[in-house]
Every structure is written in C-alpha cells, then in structure tokens.
Image (cartoon, rainbow, N blue to C red; front, side, top):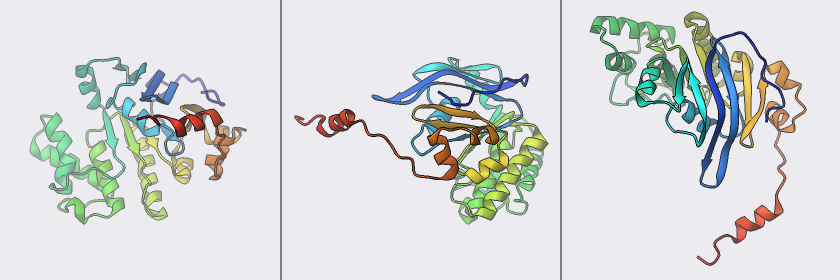
Length: 274
C-alpha cells in the first residue's frame, strides 16, 4: 500500500477507483488499488516498466474489465456498468495515444474531424472550424492537408492530442506524451498540456516515465509498483518518502531486487515432464 496517504480535499472527484485487482493467469498485476482524481487537476501515474500502468489505464478507459473492483468516472459507474453508460461516458473523455494513432490514409484535418463527424450532428462548416481551432492550439495551423507519414514524431503527438480534445472532453488521458521526443519538443508538449488544463478546465491523467515532465506538469503523482500503489501526493510529499522504490525512480537508480529462492527454483523446474 502507499507510503504517503492521499490527502483529503473538498474538490469534486472526476475519477474514483476502489478495490481494483487484475491478473494475467497466475500473475497478479494490480492488487486492491484505491485512488481518486480531483476535477481540474493534472494527475500523473508513474512506475517502472511492467508495474501495471498500462493495465490500469486499460481498465479505467473501459477497454478491459478488472477481476474485481469498482470504477466511477464523472459520476457514472464504469465498472460494474452498462455498455450504454460506457458509450455515453466516452463522449466526455479524450485519449491521446503514445504514438498518435492517426489513420494513415486520412489527412491530418480529416483525422481531427472524425470524432465530431461520428458523434455529433454539427454541420460540416462548424466541424471544420472547430477542428482548425484545435490544430491552431497545437501549433499545427497550415498542416491540415498533410498526411500522417509526413509529420515528425512531435507533430504526430500534437495532432493526436488535437483529435483527443476536439470534442472538449471533461477528462483527458495521455499515454507517454514525452516518449521518443527530444527535450525541446517534450517541453513544448508539456506546455500544451498545461495550456489545455488552464484554458479548457479539463481533468488530465498522464501516464509517463519522464520525471522531467512529471515535475513540470503534475499537481499530484501516483507511483505504482509491485502490484500496488507506493505513494500518492505532490512531488514535495513524494520526495520525502523513505521508500527505496520511490527514491530509485526519482533518482533514476537501479533497484536491487530480492530473489525468492523457492519461487526461483519452482520457475526453473516447472513442467519438466511435459
């Protein structure tokens, strides 16, 4: 469980997760996870590779059901819940994927317009203006006729972000915004995330490995490790934790792992008769 307790506040809750557990076969990836995200904050989820960040994100987005637990988003039960409720909820959320996830056969503008065309009854001119506004916000004005293959890595991420926010979602999920980017481009993207929070008043949940990005944008950070939550708090609060796992992440040190001899031997000798 966390070494830093989640601070109580009067802020309305955008996302609440209670008792969430998830397994792959016999491997317990997440074990009895509890946390909440306040409306209007930038909430960063960190942890080493394999800590369960992506699995947690999939559950929160409704892409996979956990083994146990409850998820409530914007006052709607996501799990357990209904397909109708999930569909309605997805119109209030935006997702910016790690590599942009644009449709390669469509222009940048067509990609941005797609959510509006599929989910609203707005006329074509209004859709075009709204999409161009989001492209301008992402510093992509003039690139609307480009194809995704013609964009740089940073431009692809910004285009994906424009599509994620074109419907002005109340909550935005961003998976590894800085991955694969040079420091200058990553810093520019961090600035855009802050701009979105301030201009559109949306709640933003970011999954990242990048400590520099987390330091710049996070109101609070949650560190996941060994199937559970190791800490939730501000950077200052987490920085005071004596937990060696947390300090290894903050200081980018190699974490020394204890080896269970019996478990190690069992893995080596499993299924020898097959």
